[in-house]
Image 1: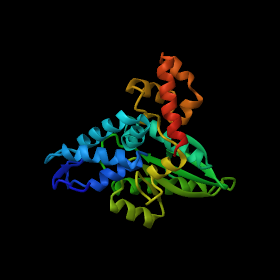
Image 2 (image 1 turned 45 degrees about the horizontal axis):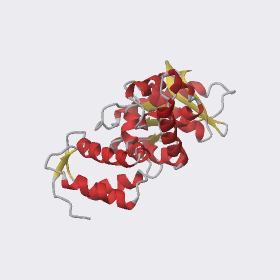
Image 3 (image 1 turned 90 degrees about the horizontal axis):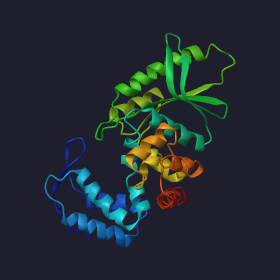
Image 4 (image 1 turned 180 degrees about the vertical axis):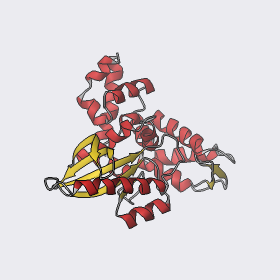
Length: 281
């Protein structure tokens, strides 16, 4: 079914863009829904389009239709929004990045004070692997449509250089490998160009290609707790405040659901949803 209406839709940034049926279809496929369900939802959403509809309205419609069929599909579909829900502060996002690195074989510490040549710096995440150390700065935006511009890697590169200048004076330190900049949004082209030139590693929602945040999350099955379509916002905030940022952690620490007074029936549904998510990646 490819009779796409030729209409303009409004992105989160306020920009207009032409609606793409293929883009909607691909995002629905990514949720794990089968071909028939994907085509049914594409057809229904396409019938309800109108000039100037927002991407958020399209998302909400598709999400509601997925949730009716299977909550785990809806959870995977909302991954990008779930990352935004790790806010409003950046700390849960830092913990989330630390957990992804931990499952990738790094030893990690969050919120580390390191001396620089000029001043001291609080580094979001310090990661160790193969006898080298990586320092990682996280830039979290809780508003959709905001990109990470060149000012961010410029600023972080100067901090990295200050730390490195002091770091190398201590012969007992393991080699400092590289500085990373991680964001939940996208980098502008200038930011990417600067990162390449300055030898900074940039990681965003979809960069590097095929190895961005969304790819790593799917590959490792490390979904944030905020993807759950069954937990309320209050329950999610309670779990985040106790450093439960991954669905995998809740499977291990299910007693938190008892603390929240969740009924046994609902508890079974929640744990079933997130178990499917973690096991079928």
